[in-house]
Amino acid sequence: MTARSTTTSTPLGPDSLTWKYFGDLRTGMLGVWIGAIQNMYPELGAGVEDHSILLREPLQRVARSVYPIMGVVYDGDRAARTGAQIRGYHESIKGTDAAGRRYHALNPETFYWAHATFFMLIIKTAEYFCGGLTEAEKRQLFDEHVQWYRMYGMSMRPVPDSWEDFCEYWDRTCADELEINKATLDIFSIRIPKPWFVLMPTGVWDQMFRPLVGAQRWIAAGLFDPALREKAGMRWTPSDEVILRLFGKAVEIAFLAVPDEIRLHPRAVAAYKRAEGRIPADAPLVEAPAFTAPPRDRRTLPVHYVPRQKSLIERAGSLVHTTFSLAGLRPARASWKPERAA
Image (cartoon, rainbow, N blue to C red):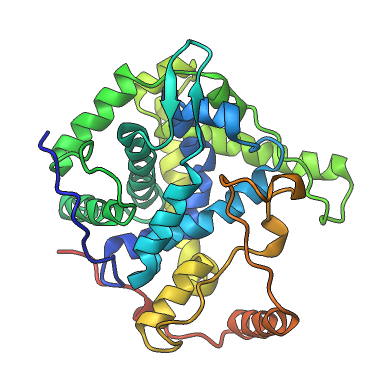
């Protein structure tokens, strides 16, 4: 593996495949997969065990974190600033794990592993739920993931040189470095606590979310490499694979009728609008909803992104915008999608 230059590059744009796939709602079906496979990396899992409150507020934690993560792809000329913001959240995440191993979230190999899982999130979502990818598209997505990673301002030392090298890196890491630790087991057995603002009995909430988490755990088992499945003690049969493929095809067909402003993350929707000139290029970046903010006792800690509180006028404008969007007053779907690579 040859060390890459740390010089910056241009941010990704609407002609990229990463823009097409990363903001797609279907990536959410791989929530257990990506949470578990990230935490299996020893340094990353240790950081989660010592510094994260994911189990305390999993829905809010994931919902707010996705906004800046999406921003490194969709924020255009501001993407590098968003990347630096994310890097800053990780500066104080360090310590010593239960085995006496020192860790730091900004260790280049650790930080890159997290990025590699987001890249593979795109690959697996597209392959299973969006109709698949050609080999040329996988290579294009690999090149784009390198361009995307530069936005963080991190060392490029761990980044493989080619798609083929990346596949070897991924297989080797899954087989030799990942482990089933407490942070991973917490994801497998995660319970989604009912947020305070949801007006339904806790028992009803639990019954509603238990099968959803179970379904995500089943999807994760199918998407894990065989070596990881064995480490996790998960069972996967040829029949399971057929069912998952049929389910993926059904999801692909169903999403043909889903409007773009529902299918895409709000940060992605705003990015396409800026690219098309329908909102100013310097329009404020879309923030996570205020109700996803971390608990009040944690908001001053440097590890947290705290969404900016919107004014009453801004909230009213967002409500009107959303109402018209869901009513069908949106651009034609064709203008939102880059053409597939040859």
